[in-house]
Amino acid sequence: MPSVDALPHPFTFDPAETALLVIDMQRDFLLPGGFGESLGNDVSQLSRTIEPLSALLAAWRSYGLPVIHTREGHLPDLSDCPPAKLRKGGIGEQGAFGRILVRGEYGHDIVDELAPLEDEVVIDKPGKGAFYATELSEVIEKLGAKKLVVTGVTTEVCVHTTVREANDRGFDCLVLSDCVGSYFPEFQRVGLEMIAAQGAIFGWVADSPTLIAALQEQK
Amino acid sequence: MTARIGPVKANPYLWPYDGSVPVANTALICVDWQTDFCGKGGYVDSMGYDIELTRAGLPATARLLDHVRGLGMLVIHTREGHDPDLSDLPPNKRWRSAQIGAEIGSDGPCGRILIKGEPGWEIVPEVAPVAGEVIVDKPGKGAFYATNLDLVLRTHGITHLILTGITTDVCVHTTMREANDRGYECLILSDCTGATDPSNHTAALHMVTMQGGVFGCVATSDDVIAATEV
Image (tube, rainbow over all chains, first blue to last red; front, side, top):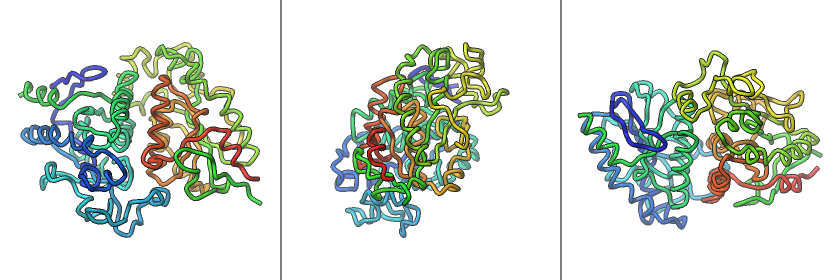
């Protein structure tokens, strides 16, 4: 079984029982001119993940392993957007790439470089966590996955919330430091530290070249 | 006249977003104030962490409990723990706790670690539940997963949550994130929480306030008490 050199200790996994989760790599969060940038954020902190994530996706797909993508967004009538969230502004308004974080809009979809393949699952989620009010648990169960490799944005918000949900459900999570991104370097650092703290309280942390090397060794 | 809470002087906005909220629609959530997390000989103590850090929020929480009990606010206590036969303990959680030298289910100075019914699993006396308060037992870090918390809150007509407890970055944060996704308007209290690592306490509170309050707001217990209108 491949073993990845990770924090706080090696992460061993059976590829047949591991799924790759790609969280919210959406144009609204990543593209210059989009919603994320309009809030004053430096999107380059997120877009630096696209290149390593593309390489990882290529490697992962070459072994025929499952990939699950998620997108945060709401129905066009915003009936699934809690009032407190709506009040903070942005969502449903007209942005550079269509209505912000609304399903079906250009900005809501995943960036071209990481576009899902036809047979890959895309989970649409109304919140930060990918398990709440979605079919993710059922999808993972159907795939027979017991462990998750977690990538995407942003580290301390949607990645963290999803990893916490997965951890409570008994899934081991390996978070890839170069394939997750935060608008805030300080939260990138502390977000990763919190995951591996107290003996992997939420999961493990490594980088994608280490994971790819472990997969290749296995072959 | 029904008592209301708000607007509370909070960060990053005056909480709640809708100005103020009747006490009847607000709950105080006390997360995992258990001996295992803040008592001598408990789980956190056994792992070698300084329990003074996780005990730091006890006096302020006890004072706030007095205040909200006087208002008739719903108080909900949570406890992390597992069945004695460990049937609800994920194997990876057990393995990791063993790696760090405090295996869940093994014998410690306060009984079997994180096992329901053991002395270490009980809530510490300073903030112990009183008759009529709800107790939610949870197998994970989040208080919503595999529990009846959401049902209890909706049944009571609760829309707004005030969070205290330990630890800030682990169980309180996970619960706040779950609550936020479910549409509850949340307020976490900096002086009624605590972490095994003070920098994680600070960072976790800071994370809440970013992007216009991505998970809600941060305030102190004094801010809440000052914003109560009877």
